[in-house]
Image (spheres, rainbow, N blue to C red):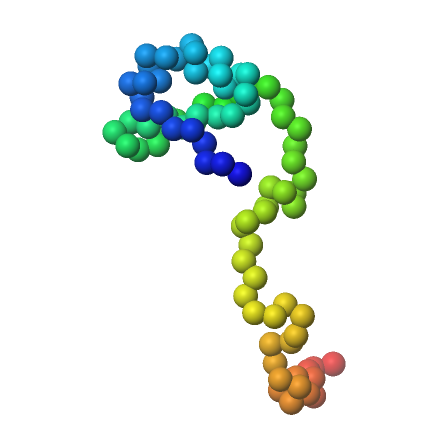
Length: 86
C-alpha cells in the first residue's frame, strides 16, 4: 500500500477544486500539511466496499519466535502440569 499523497496547505488552497476532482475520480486521499505537520486528510466520500478484517489488520501483528512449539521445555511443561490445580 502506498503512502497517501501530501500537499502543503498553500498548494491545496491554490488548487482546491482540481484536487477535489482528483480525489473523487481516483478515490485516493490527500494529506494536507501546514508548516510540515499533518493537519488534515481529504478522502473520497463515495462508499467503498469494506475490506475483510484480515486485510485491514495486515502488517499490524509481528510474530516473535516459534508459534507452534511451547515456550517451555518438555521438563518444565511436565512440572507445570503436575502443579495444576484440578
